[in-house]
Image 1 (spheres, rainbow, N blue to C red):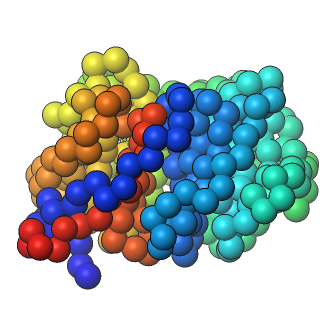
Image 2: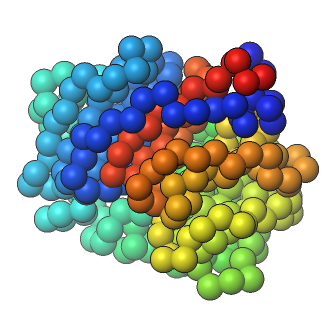
Amino acid sequence: MKITDSLLRSFKVARTYRLNSEKVNCVDYSSNGEHAVSSSDDDSIVLYDIQEGKPFSTLYSKKYGVDLIRFTQGEAQTVVFSSNKLDDTIRYLSLTDNKFIRYFPGHTARVTALSMSPVDETFISSSLDKTIRIWDLRSPNCQGLTDPLGKPVCSFDPDGLVFAAGVESQAIKLYDIRAFDKGPFACFEARLNRVCDWTGLKFSNDGKLILICTNGGAVRILNAFSGLVLHTFSGYNNNKGIALEACFTPDSQFVMIGSEDGRVHVWSTESGMKVAVLDGKHPGPINTLQFNPRYMTFASACTNTSLWLPCVDDL
């Protein structure tokens, strides 16, 4: 099934789960699309079976808190996550027996991004300590460190060869993972003409676009090769300066973001036009939004988590 404007407009909430007492701060899908995991400010980790459309396991990280959770490569048995209590160590957890496999200490301030390599055991993290660290799941030692000269957010490209750093909410620097110590091979200015912080970067699946998420009322996409700003998307509610997460659809043709008023806004990456506004009936701001990499469904979350499906009868 091809993702089109009319298909996106037909999406409706299929299931809503009220499992969290505080906001859900992150949702991630496994690479095969069959599982999702959420982390919340109430210290819980909830695992969802997407084919069944229901949660099947809840774990807790009461001591360390949990934020920015990511499945590791392969099966949905293990995750890495950053902490929002105690310290800024990244932790590697087995979901099957709720035991930590490894700790990754090094950051000295809040972790702002975690990005898994799509091809191997590598992952990268950025922090308010103004560093980006490169890790290997098999070793607790930092494999490399780069200082991008400012507060960064970071993301791998879909080939796992390049990572992007958004620095001090004004420039994007591109690094070769095999030669990151030589510094960035490209740098693009992409400052927005409004006061806001960049809160995340994402590459489209075709590798051609970079999405900048912010805590202002706008997100922006750039050409990943030239750095040319293609579109700035606005017109959604975010008056409180919340870090609302935007995402690409898997075909790279659309960008979606939740808003403060519980609606999901969708734009075409080609035309820049808004193609849909979907009402998720969320009682609070949609902090996190992810489209499934394999199946025609997406998840949005405030304190509640909603799973969406297209309503084919509406087409």
